[in-house]
Length: 291
Image 1: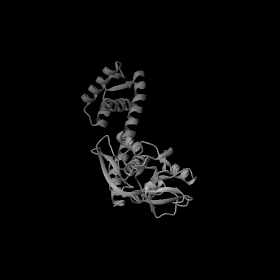
Image 2 (image 1 turned 30 degrees about the horizontal axis):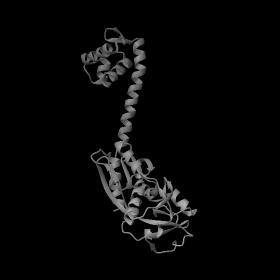
Image 3 (image 1 turned 90 degrees about the vertical axis):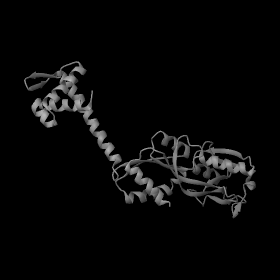
């Protein structure tokens, strides 16, 4: 069964006249009659009582017309939704970003984009890098701003946007809180509050520890940088975090004497996957915004 057969049936059912229905559909009368005959053969029941060129919808036809109206209405809605999504000025973009960027970085960025393209809507998702990558692989995101992935499962287009320094985050009462900088060795015996294993930020921090020959004593593993910073502020330990989104009045951020104490934030999308005009516009805007 083809959707055009259903469309032809709907028109004929409304008019109950082969000639007028064929004219309405810009179709020859024999072609319309053959299409309806094939439909009735597939359904196994007649849909019309025939009286020459005039037809009367029978009880089977009325039942099928109710369903046909729903099918064609859903198809029409789907077409409109897809047209809205791919229209460059009225589409929708599924966009993901890191928790640590949610306080001001991403809201300011999205606000700037909406000033330029007010008709484009967003479907936003906030999470850690590897979770966002999973949504990207599943086709649930068009683009995401994340930390540089170390082991992508599928070919990614990766566009670095900016470098973010990772600081030692200390309670304001800590003896080193006022230092200009420190080495990780100076924190070797401190209790550490870190993000969970499997987070890109935790991978970066673990590499820093390994390069410094440190085996940290981890007392808590959280899911968000704000949670880790909150526990640091409460005096429960120290952490290594980017300064973005941290409250400088609740904790002290001290520079680490290590050139590798940084992470790269960039734009990720699946290489070769179709991007709607709206998503392509956001991709270019993202690159230009952080250029």
